[in-house]
Length: 581
Image (cartoon, rainbow, N blue to C red; front, side, top):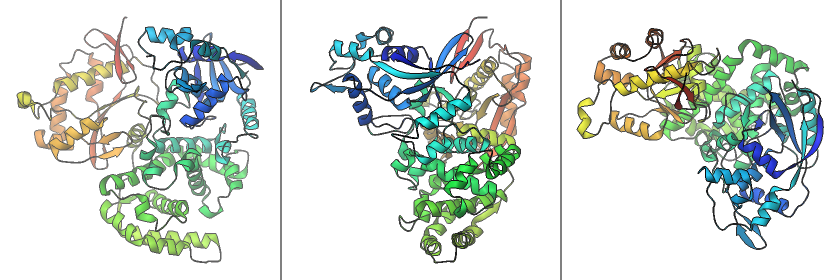
C-alpha cells in the first residue's frame, strides 16, 4: 500500500542508472507521451548537466510491492531517457570542443554491462573525470506515494506553466474515465504502439516510440497511418493531433452529435465523468466498450488494406488540396462508421479508391460551400460522400468476439508476444531443392512447435482477458511472407507488422480442404509427447475468417504445469525457456 509521502530528494544520475539497470524504473502511459525529443534536444540537455546548470524537477511515484521498491516516471521521461541513452553509448557529446562518448568505466553499472558483453565502448571517449562528475550530478526528484487523484493534480500543475504539453496531451494525461482510456487504446493501436498494460519499463519506451531525426526508435514514423496517408505532419503527430481527431470522432459518435459541435469545451467535458457529456459517454461505454473499439480499429485497418492493395492513399483519394484535410478526413470517417455500424464493408477496393479519387474535387467544393451553419455543411458533405461510395459497399456479417480478439492482438505493438504465437501455416513450402519431396506435406516441426509452445503457455500467468493463443495463418515477419507470396503467387493483407495469409491456399493445394488438413494435424498431435489434456485442447481449435482468409486459432485452456517431453517450459516474450521443476 502507498502512504502519503511527498518529498523532494537529491538523487544522483548514478542512482537513476542503477534503478534502470535493475528494472526499477517504469513509465505510466496515462501521464507520459512517447519519446519525442530529437537527438539535438538530448545533446543540449546533457550539455546542461555537464555544465552543472539547474534543471526542472522530475516527478516519480514510489511503489512498494512484495518488499521491492520501484518508481514510475510521472514527469520527466524525456530527460531521464536522455541521461540513460547517453550513458549507454547511443550518442556522443561535445565538451570543450571535442566530441566523445561516455566512458563506460566511470560507473560500476556500465562497467558491469561491458563485462557481460551487453555494452560496447564507442570512441572517441570523453575524459573519465568528466564522466565521473556527470554521474554525481544531483537531480531534483519529487518522489511521492500519494493517491492517484493527488498525483493527477500535481502532474497537471507541473505542466500548467513553463514548457507546456499540447492542450490535448494535458487533457488526456491522467484522465481515468472510460472515454480517455478508449481514446488512448485506439490511438496507440493505430500508431502500432499498443501494449497490454499502460505501465511499461523505461527500457520498453524506445521500442514503442516514433522514430526521430538521428534516433532509430521502434516505430518508423513514415509507416504510421497518419503519415503514410498524408493526413498529418510529423510535428502534429508528435503533438498528439491524431489522438485529438480520434477523441472528436469518438465524442460525436457517443453523443450522437455533428462533428462540427465537438468543441474544445465539449472535449474537456468528455474527459470528465462528472459532467453531463462525460456521463453520457461513459454510460454507453460501460455497455459496448469493446464493440466500439473494434468498430473504430476495423475502419482504420480497412483503410490501410485499401492502400496495401491499390497503392492509393487517403490523401490521393480525398484531398484535392491541403485545405481542410483533417476536416474532410473526419467526415469521411464518419460515413465509414455509419456504414460499418450497419454491417456494410467495401467490396472492390480498387473501384472504391478510384471513384473517390475522381470525386475529391467535388467533395472539397461541397465542404467549402457557404451555408447557414457548420452543421448543414457537414450534413451536405456527408450525404455526398455516402452517395459516392454507396454502390461500392456490400453486406457483411458482424464480427464475432473471437475475430475481434484476434484483430486486437494483430494490432498490438510488436513487442507484445508473451500471450500470442503466430505460425504461417501447417505445411512445407519453399523448401530447398534437396528437400523438395517434403513440399505440401504436413510440417511435423511446426506441429511439434505448436505443442511445445502450448505447454509453455500453460506455465505463464493467464486470465480471461489474456489467454494463451496460437494463431495459424499469419506471417509475423516480412521474409517469411515473401517466401509464402512467391511460392503461392498471392499477396496478403497487413495488420501492423503481421500479414494475414490464411491456411486456405495450402489446404486447397495439398489437402483439397481445410478439414482434411486439420484431420492430418489431429493425427500428428496424438504422437506429440504431451498430456492427453493438452492434446484434446489442441484438437478443439476455432476456425475464423479475416478478410476472407481462414485462420486456425488454438486457445490454451489446459491446466497449468504442462510438460513437453518430460520438460517444463515457460514463455519469455516469443522465446521458450526450460525451467526446473
